[in-house]
Image (cartoon, rainbow, N blue to C red; front, side):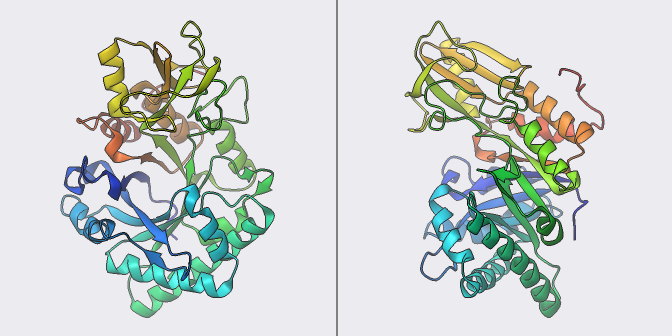
Length: 366
């Protein structure tokens, strides 16, 4: 299994095509590129694509490999809470699992993908986690068998997982993950959002959390390692988006200040999500108060009036990449998502550059 190959990855989503078409991706910044999403049909448990997504997904691999023939591409399946029920139903039955596995192998080969990314967000009860274990075992067996029969390189098999090995006290099957998967993508962001934490602002992608230690990427990664998952099987998530809260009082604008749910405003979603390119615009247009690096949490945050935004800045990304590489020994990072970066690809270029630096950025800020 290809567990020791460095992963500097990025996600691209078909719904961003109007703003950021495939042709804009600089594939030389990445070792791996994920294309999402393939949907899971709730009746047949096979993969399906919308009419607009299908040609983009089929075109993706060949297009990004034109500029970097070495880049590996993976088809991402699922990816949101809306698909969780379909995943749970699929994984609960051996025949449904077989339909799913046969379908994703077929679709991945049709699109010239090098692998697949299973995004069941998240198996959070004992029964679901048991079925997740069965699913990844059978996925592994399926891709191994297909590779032998087709004489093609085996499909890379990845799962995207919670930042901690525990979800509501239910533990991921770590020993099976070690045997069945090439690596896991750890979503070490969206730990706090205006939906999950409406009454106070939160360090959405906290690396450390001096006030609530367990709600942090560093704590989660350390726990995965302590529970037996090798650090070289983990790839760390870096968000190219932030979250915007509405402050209760504009005079109180720190982490964990009183809030009233998501902020409204231009370029902010109903849930409060705002992309990095628009965060930069928000700061510039409003001459907003800005803390590009809060060293206690390793996040940036900014505010103007009643709008408060937590986000990743160049300084926080430098620090996190150094820390996960040098001190935690992780195998790489992934960015979510490529289209949310600014027009100069500033964060993506910085992440690529920092990973290649060796010791790079000093990690003694803690």
